[in-house]
Image (tube, helix red, strand yellow):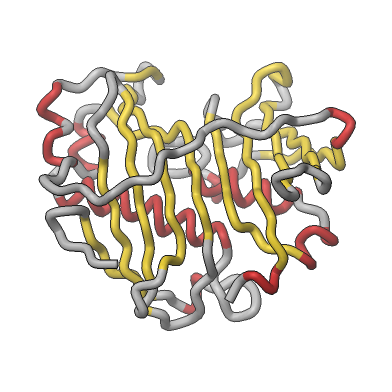
Length: 261
């Protein structure tokens, strides 16, 4: 699988000890963080980094993630991260990312949909057409068509609920809960039996409403072991003070642990 800088933005990643999770390997949340950092590095590279956006009171906000995880790298592995954007649609922009190992074998593949937002007004902001041009490549890499739909949630399969408070450590540069934290919360929901015998092979996230420090959070965790397409779990995340409004939904699709190298 060949690639060059006419197809995508390329960024080297070295797995550090502080990235590790279980069994000497990184965890699914670290995969999410690597992918998120790739998008930031790409924006920095073309001059649209955090400082550029903050001066204009703007930020990229994430709407969806569709991430396939093929394996979890170990300490000191050298990885190659690649990311590239598609032509934007109205105020939304789609981005694909892939991480390869030293043998040029895929670690993960991710699709994401983002929107530029006025952070003072907390609503989408329409940028001029030429803003998006530096994100595009003359010969972009092939893409997988993302699927931002979610499997059904059956109330009869509700496994557990829990409540907690958003704390300082959950926040990001835009004064709301970081995208990766929702995935951490969903991992904390997973029951011990599912975690012990399986691995996460796909992550899907839909972000609907932001949460900020001090908010009381309610998560509802659903376990579907018998779906024809394979086992999946879903965490629906709510603001406890507004339980009718879902803030995010995180679905994990599972496979046997022995499938992962």
